[in-house]
Amino acid sequence: MEVVLAIVTGTLYAGGIYLMMRRNPVQLIIGLCLLSHGSHLLIFAAAGLRQGGAPILSKGRQYFTALPADPLPQALILTAIVISFAVTAFVLALLLRAFERAQIDDIDGMKETDT
Amino acid sequence: MMLLPALPILFPLLGGILCMLFRCSLAFQKTCAIIISILMLAVSGTLLGLTSGGVIAVLHVGGWAAPYGIVLAIDMFSAVMLTLGALVALAVSVYACSDLDEGRIRSGFFPLLLIMMMGVNGAFAAGDLFNLYVWFEVLLTASFTLLALDGEAPQLKGAIKYVALNLLSSAFFLAGIGILYGIAGTLNMAHLAVVMAQDVPDGLATAAAVMFIMGFGIKAGMFPLFFWLPASYPTPPAAVSAIFSGLLTKVGVYSLVRVFTLIFCHDTSFTHGLLLVGAGFTMLSGVLAAAAQHEIRRILAVHIVSQIGYIIMGLGLFTPLAMAGMVFFLIHVIIVKANLFLVAGAIRKLKGSYELDRLGGLYRDHTGLAILFLIPAMSLSGLPPLSGFFAKLVLIVAGIRAESWVVVAVALAVSLLTLYSMTKIWAGSFWKDPPADAPADNPELIQGAWRRLLVPIIGLTTLTLYIGAGAGTVFHFSEATAEQLLDPACYIKAVLGGDGS
Image (cartoon, rainbow over all chains, first blue to last red; front, side, top):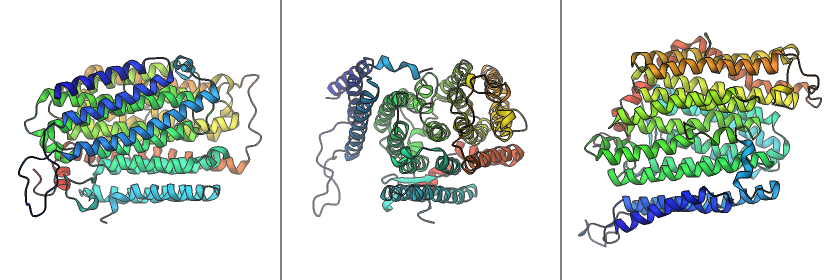
């Protein structure tokens, strides 16, 4: 399972970087999304995959009989997903405004503020 | 007392909410921002006094013991950064009151500024890596909006680049967090320090370290990841540029310092060596790029990059003296840099242009402004007896003692080239005769507004002079801060309690 997740993470990173290099701003956004999803999966995989029950003690128990799943990475990923969702919404709004104000539909058309 | 570490976060949150509630009243927003900045300064000052007595202010949020709950931990270094942040916020709030156009204030400049300060303060106070990530996102989201606020085409173009590269850096940061959690099973920084000091797989730890260098390096504007900075920082109004240049890149630097003193000390010859090489190139590329510029704000923006190089050089050398120099340099550069952007904004307000070709004769007409530019500019280039001289002196002495000849040579050469850039601005806008088509003084600028514009500049300049005059005191303070940074035992004990192992 780790191998599959590793390959998927790598593919997401590769796809994300590739799309970020394209000239279309929408592809830039999709690339950023893929990159952040790659990072989320990486956290999930790096924290260790194991088949365990939910980390909730049943009534009257003092300890777990089997090692439960680690809930922390999932909480971290959930937070990160919410953040990346909000930021993606902002980037979309920004690009829309940039298109309205300056007709930017090509990343190469933004060179003049570079040094 | 218990809540003290949370106050630098709570005050700006409160201020941001109040400003949003009273959106219609510009006067209320201005007053609120200034009062909140003063409150932040007071709290940070208290924390500074407390931590310099050797105490580390720790708050276990919700009463959950570390390493399970979220921790806010403020040591001397955090307290210094909090104080500097509050100072810059105060100066920029006062400045923005008389500089910023009404449209931008109506679109929410002050609430955004305060929310951004909440993120910045949160990042300085965070004792947990994931918490640090969340604060980063808070401050970045606010800064994205500040950068794009009411913007025309160039500002929006700058904002797109800023946003895209910062999101990329967040992805790296997150990946580093994931790998680190996989190695250590914890994200509490003090607990990580304990775990990473024991037996960990070196290769994986180094991989995570490089992820953090990439992530924070982009945010700090380090070579070769700085290209977004000159493309975006000079586009918004001067007040925004000033707070960005003073604080945002420094949050990246702060995180680098925190992570590379506390967590990644397993292979200093590689990680800190990499930082040192990066520092040399950062200084050089920044100052060379600045030499090619002909607009005040762009010159200053590219110079942020070269100054970042000096700070990272201190971290890369990783000796007690170098770390003291780094802290000194941070104290010096945050104040000077924000001040220079404010002066540039004042010039723009007066003449309506940043272009050196269109300016001139300001020394003759506005001697006071010329002196207010000259002091921070010469301090930035490191002329004695100003603050920059002592900051660079400490770093270079540390470099010589560590026998890192190349980086010392680079630092000295860059210092000279900085002087060249500053002289270029001086000669171009203050000294030379104005060109025939030079714009006249802005007729709408009334005397009272002009004076109010100069108040924060005078305040920051006085501070620069004070740091230069009282360099001994500041140096001893920096030394104590560096000592605390290099000996994390105290920090670990304060966060984890006595039985933390």
